[in-house]
Image (cartoon, rainbow, N blue to C red; front, side, top):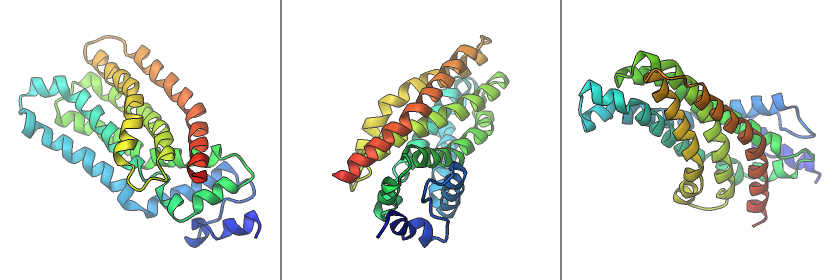
Length: 244
């Protein structure tokens, strides 16, 4: 059975989608992954529910004083966005590994870089981008200053894309493990720290009346480096996991 025939039996065909065989276009990969992601609504809804619910409970736990909430708002929103992204990382390659689709993708003649990049991009669109869109509303609930709304949205839009890219490496390294949750967190949480520091720093600088461009520029540089390197690392990690 040739590679293409094997691929035809993959999850893509099983779900009525066009299988990404014989060097498909990146657009085809994106469309297929997006359709599959939309069908798995729990993977989209659960991180959003976690993000909104935990932040809504924060005033109950730390007190309703407006000044205190305003000082902590940026850090709280960023930490919860990081944890919500981490919550969804485990499933990034899990379904494809369990049904054999990931092995079929690894057998394709084209580099595994592009399928991994497509998966990460779709993961950000359905998980990270909604978090960024919701963040100004939650910032308003936590009494975030007016000057912080745009930097909060922009830093989260860039930062969650970086978190998805970095998390893909950890997800690929642990995809063959039965319960990778704690190990996945230990691998990628240290790599999330710079994104968290500069993300909250951008919002805090705006609230204090200082330029936040330098922090945003560093976030953009981290995103560019992650977009170039993380899919390569994740593709290599997938091949190692499949061989073992």
